[in-house]
Length: 137
Image 1 (cartoon, one colour):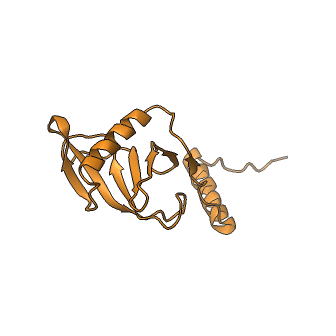
Image 2: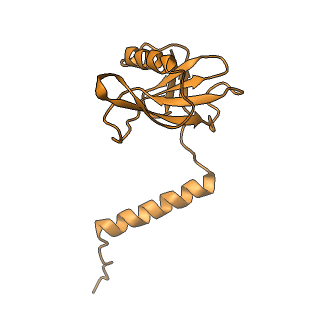
């Protein structure tokens, strides 16, 4: 008696099929990324760095034009300009602008550390992970 055996599928082919199924499922049920977490205080590491950067940006008048700005030690820091708050994680009705926390050479890649300032109220938020979480300074 002869038994038919199915041909073995390679792992890259299996991966492609699984990813296609997952993509289809996500599209079907509308899975979206989890919402950001918003905290009323900042006690995590790097909060002191964020407060220091906030004080420097404040001394520069919180520029509203995106671009590179001179910083201490011959370095530069970047502001991305208007933060749209599209996901509505921060209080609504504010006019927000985003600023990098850490300075670097002009033109260097940006990291994930940002402060976001509500220009209407002056309240500043720190995001250590590019808008996944917000901590009020």
